Length: 249
Picture (cartoon, rainbow, N blue to C red):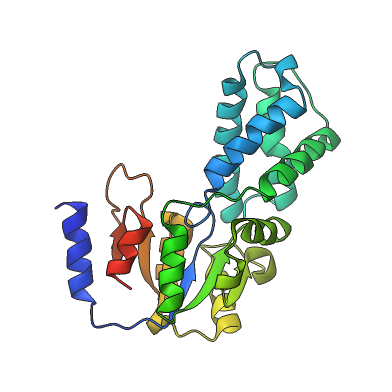
């Protein structure tokens, strides 16, 4: 069965539901985190003269992304701390194949420079602003739900112009737990007074956004942004572009 057919069947199956609240992930759902971070990495490479150690910048970029993706998965599961992630996502690629042994202080400095370069990048995922304007006009209560770091997310929200769209901003550091933990979603319900029966979770990460929300009793819309295959999970909706959500909402 095609992904499109699955999506149409999902719409038909629960078309009578009326949602009042939307829990929306931020990074790589609305905000082009990967694209903005890649630009920042290129700027970082030049600013800190990493060409001293990497003849090919792509080697550094590839190792950074490999480490970063793994560390964020471990962070979402509560296996590593924020401080560990901040240091290791640069220590690992700097060590790769070059015999370097960067200090924690140097890795933190690199992280600080990277944060400053990242935080003011404005680029959104295609269709994000049009969707948010549409949802706002439709009268939905919208709540950002993110595992991102507190000081980073607020700057990115302002940089991309989406700060004013949200009724509440729910961050894992405030909740005391990361998505997909039930504790995160319990905190989100407490802060928003949303009813799980009339709340839809929208996100691009199948594990943290979608399965976490399903376990908390929410309906889910999986934004399969880079689809290789349809979700094997029983999601309520699956879309491959943000504007497809207008057919649901």
